[in-house]
Amino acid sequence: MSEISQIAIEPEIIVEYLKSDLKLKEIWQKILFKRVIEEAAKPRGITVTNEEIQAEANKQRLEKRLEKANDTLAWLTDQLISPEDWENGIRNQLLSKKLSEVLFTQRVKQFYAQNRLDFEQIVFYQIVVANQHLAQEICYQIEEGEISFYEAAHIYDIDDKRRQQCGYEGKFYRFHLKPSLAAILFTASPKKVLGPICNEQVYNIFMVEEFIATELTTEKHDEILNQMFQEWLSAELNYLLHTS
Image (cartoon, rainbow, N blue to C red; front, top):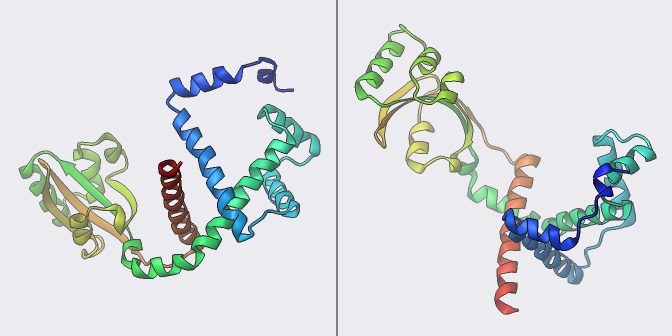
């Protein structure tokens, strides 16, 4: 038995804590989302079978390396839930997934096709300094081969994290960037220095590492599907709140 479960906590205290931790609204919303999902699944004949629940449970056990039944029971006890609670949670997850697929799978490809350019990705570096003269001098030194872009970022950038990463910003979708910045970066030549560009009293120097061609991978499909489903849930809940 989990040691923590031996200490009783009344439901009222749990609710009080959720309020004080500003988490009650989030939990309340999730409960209402569950109601919306169940009510939407019924007329569409969407159900979850015991076999599907068991298959997902086996998958989760494998991921958590719960090889024996006793290992699973010990883990459930530590989580303060029963096997029935766990199966109910799995059922809710699978029902949500099935409903999202029924509602939006056919729309994902259309949405992707219409917004294909937004899903292009880019990997880039940047150096940010506060002085225009310094920014221009850095660009000159890089172009003349006196210092590498990475060395300059490590020495001069005003941000500690970016200095440690030698200017590395990461991989971004086009839609994650401001349109003005995306227009500059996505028309640049890889490994070429861009700048300095004045931006809110600082000066930016950019270097594009690579462009990543877009394709509708399984991961991207699921990302778009989940976004559509979450937007639909929010709209349905808003309707429910204003008609109840």
